[in-house]
Image 1: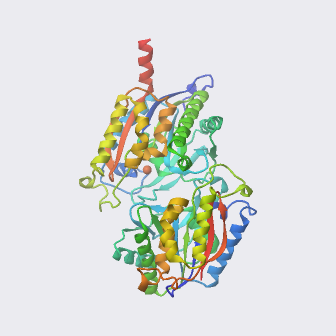
Image 2: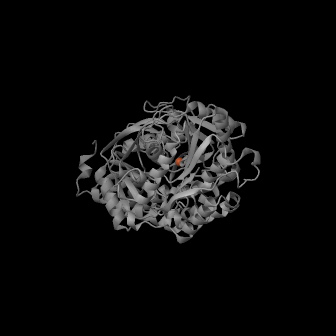
Length: 280
Length: 313
Ligand SMILES: [Fe+2]
């Protein structure tokens, strides 16, 4: 694991975690709060955020607005209210990541437009990890056409850029595990996984993460993607492996190079698989 | 709200005047350079823009009370949602083509009709919701289709979301839901006495290039994604021209699978169902590709069909 990376996280990103009555989904919210506090405790220079909810089709998009700000309303759960946001983007580091990504043959696209729609997942992350909006962030999109290798290459570009800039970073991916929503209105106590099979597969992957069995997780990932419909076909996992793996052993993820994950909480969130994981 | 007061008399039975297949590549607004959109272009995609020009004239002549649009880019997973704020405004930036579309929108919403659609949808057994948050940023699909049909924005609108969840189950479930939503829309229009125009905001074949030229409106770079995709578009358009909706509905699943067609979002089926699956030939105003996708601007004018019906009685 790149020595510039202090910690890494896997997080859910639905609006219910940051908005709505405090008494709903409390276990998940507490886990998110603990994870956020753990990240803030290391006083990172920068956050690197991969959000599976920021979907791009013309290559990989990167946020280049130095200070995105505004009001966001979730397109499905608009009744929960508004997410107000304002946070700094580390434009120099972002450009460094883009350079390495381009060198790896990936198509990149910087976005810097007032009013650009920041996705709900990125803002849920801000809510728990950057409550004062004072830690600079690098945000990358999830390219719909990008497979396992390119996602890992994108992760490598992050790792290379951090090694270059010598900044101390916390990296995070916001992504559901299984991503099939319950399609009816529910109260939080009625929440459950959309299917027991998806729950089973999620737990299988979580067990592999907790035992640092990443080679096995990578081997099973395509079957998992088919059986449990993880968000964006599990690209966030490939990206995270690309960020965390030892560059020297790129061809085979060495179990010893990435520590086991600590599971803060796992449970359903409107039918999807929500896990709060931390790598120290 | 600039509405035709005579037709909103509740004793008047509302009707759908016409339906338009109104695809929403933001490139079309970009190519036109309207004052609402910040990026400037040298034009481009004229065949589609001229097609829309004909629709604009038609809509002006029809004088509808309302334009309804079903958009794939307002994606909801729990229920079918309708815009339900009397006036919505703001800046809508396309997340995929932000360099082409940064649009200051301002629209009046026919909330009475929107309510009626939600109620009728519930009567049909669907889950329906009203979007009442005034800060809501309207999606670019809704805005592009509405702008291209009526850039003056002087006709109230109803925006309907695309509920993606039916596709968790099967194609038949999804189609069934869109048919019910179409029926609910038709009943709501009838009961509220509206003279309505419908817009299905869908591209046909949707496989596209993932890199664009440095000058996005360089038309020397614009062409169909593949011959196979083009042929399938032509097959679908020919069925529209023939009014052969039975066969059109039959091939839709294969069309969606082979060409990634955006009609999968349900807008076209919603519109055809609301119009009672008219067997009249559709009028094709124009076909063109945008970054390789296939787009047709098509019209079903139900007023001419009704006149023809009366004359043959
Ligand atoms: Fe679209």
